[in-house]
Image (cartoon, rainbow, N blue to C red; front, top):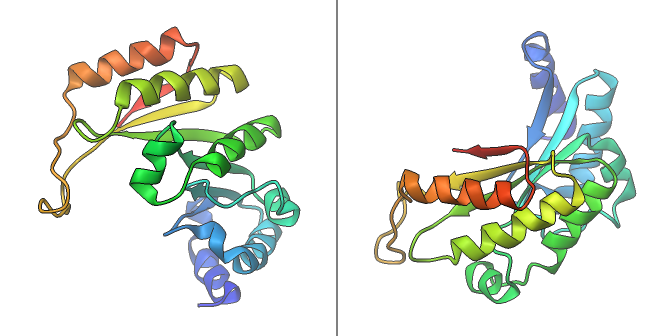
Length: 184
């Protein structure tokens, strides 16, 4: 579908929604499409959110950034080494995007998936929550419980974190100054 076709579908349900959220894969890889889509969405007065892994810089895409109301950024790992192990690339752009978007008032939420036995969850939450609190303690920090549904067990074995672990991570985030923490 091109952007006009997408907008046509959105208009059918416009009276039931207040905005759109684009996600992916990584939606920011489709910059030209997003600019066209967001320009049309602006004309029909809906909000525009971007759900991103943060790997593509916002700061050098002023037209796209201006059209975006808010972004939700996945921070998979705080340390570059762990991020490389997970994704094949470092997290420099991810962390710069978090800082940039917070600085211009367009960072709605930071998300971190909690994966026992695979990630250094306590370190990640410690450092990410400190970063969020230093930028704006009201930015939502979403701690997401890993769920192994649909995961190939021959590639990755982990488990859903217990509620006690999630409660501890919430306390860590609160101690670091985060005021808006959600667990899902």
